[in-house]
Amino acid sequence: MLDIADELHRWLRDGRTFAVATVVAVSGSAPRLPGAALAVDTEGRAVGSVSGGCVEGAVYELCVRVLSEGRPLRERFGTFDPDDAFATGLTCGGELDVLVVPVAPDGPEAAAVTRAAEGDTTALVRITGGPAGLLGRALAVAPDGAYHGTLGGPPGRDRAAAAEARALLETGRSGTVTVGADGTGADGDRCEDPLTLFVEAGAPPPRMIVFGAVDFAAALVRIGTFLGYRVTVCDARPVFATAERFPGADEVVVEWPHRYLRATGTDRRTVLCVLTHDAKFDVPLLEYALRLPVAYIGAMGSRRTHADRERRLRAAGVTARELARLRSPIGLDLGARTPEETALSIAAEIVANRRGGGGLPLTDTGTPIHHDEPRPVPRPEPRPGPGPVAA
Image (cartoon, rainbow, N blue to C red; front, top):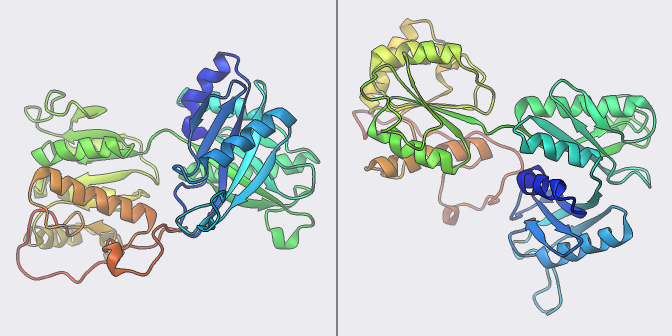
């Protein structure tokens, strides 16, 4: 729902009455992740998507029904029957569960939408399974754990749900959690009448920090922005680090890379791309970066450059475990040559690392196209001798 917060916020300001269908669970291969949403107002206008087209019509009708009846419902969509001309389902073979709720202008859904549209971090918690009559009840939760709304029942229930939401917000992830219906504990196996909750995290865009104001950086800025990152370019050389050279960057900073990284904010979603391949910049920067809890650290350079950089980092006290986090040479092996191709190879590795992909052609794998949980991207054994600037 929060992925269409800007549009829904406008609807709220205009006084529209509407219902929202949100994907709250997927299994197998599904076109959209949990959190994807479709909203329909009383005049039949729609915004958003839950499946990219497969079941949009059926979900639209569910929204119309919820607007008419005024109560939430949950529906599961699976594989459709190709022999039934009137069948509705997913052509990709997966399943998705959709929760449809009417949105009240003073309710927790509206509060979460408003916060997300204004750029604030927020989480929306909704009951998707449990005792009858509780479906769709919601809480809007702030990063400090304060919440708006109620799931009903004892106060401990709301506090437990807010605590679970706060933990997910810290990582910027949405997910399904279980709490006891009485609010005691979060282990559904030990609680009577456990509640299943879908926690949708709405956080500002993750950061991509590109160190090195080089031509490869200009291409990476463009693709990073396309992927939804807030992109910063940092370089100690003012003649190269200019807004004119990087018009697509959210900010361009003139500073020694390691000093900037120490002074700026990062989190577990941040990606760091080191493109300078110059030891006087790279080594102090990576010595600090490899000890930060960030999502991805990659460094550009040939294999010879990487070997020298690794030797210098070891001499500076960086451990083998810390060095194992470094992706170098940066990027997947696409045979990249141009700055644009190199940026694509870097972006591909970032996405694979984030989503759990193996970086192999889908034609040559029998694994699921979509991965429920991230898994490490396998690394090939390093080859001797110098190689291309980016793999």
